[in-house]
Length: 438
Image: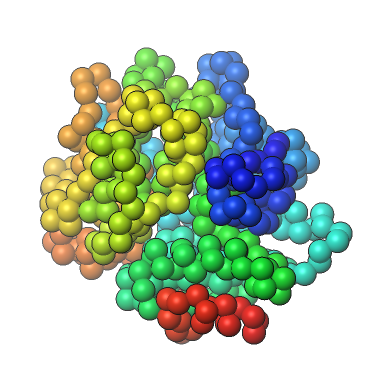
């Protein structure tokens, strides 16, 4: 499979180049030239397949031309060493629980897959044998998922850039206490500043001559495409529980920040996933919501909210969504709607859902649940992504629902480590100097 840039000014790339480089030379995001539709027979029998079997079929359609079959199967099965169950919350709304991985967040799937695929390509490499340096900007869960996904992987060093004081203490502990091949960089700015530093590093010739760089943000095709796996599995589990007719009335609601997660779902639809429509649920950072209303995309400075992983003012993957639909606003809005919620509304949703359903939402999942509660139509079944364990936002959730939230053992273990981070201004020259001395 060949990959082209959304900016259309860079040479087409192999999968290996797209994964190792992360960003195209023209600062565009890589897109596969073809999106293979899966056969109808696959969906006819999908409810009889396991999560791993489903994921391998999807992965083969994306990556099968470039990765040997047994190696790809091992990558998929190693990645999905945990389940992503579909759990009923009300009689019509279900939670796709994506927090059962090592760092209790949805990004474990993409991060673990990318770590294994990148290592596969490194082992195939015969000309450039330098270590690979992974740069990742995080507004919360990406950093912990990537850091833990790559921890101890030979030939790879990870630099996690995060905004000082703008991630939860539990999130911060998951990537600042690891050491080994993980370096945490605490940036005096917001998430968009961290993302800009990463992008500028990729575009700097001196830095790239000095270091072999790649990104593990959702700009990387190996990070966001595997996230399609759990949407296919969610459809399968709904079909298994409710039957085909109900499954085809499924509405997927995705809490959205940098839009890699919902973008992977839209790729799934292009592959034939028979989901009725999608909702992108935002916090107060409503740039995509405003685009849906007006057809005009206007990036803004990000606003800090209690759903901090979605605090993104210029979501990178909008470029992919736009390209996927050839810039046709009418086509996008024909099956994608939006929602935007204030911190007060998010807190109210967490409280109400707990009181009515005895189900604890994290702030991001609360946006998804509320959007379905408000927008679900007669005969439809709603699935929202519960993107992280509520304990990762313990203080926020407890203040909303009024009862203690237990911290899982593997999350508590991170809290016992010693913080190790490097303070960094948001200006690129300082970051460049740091990288040139590595």
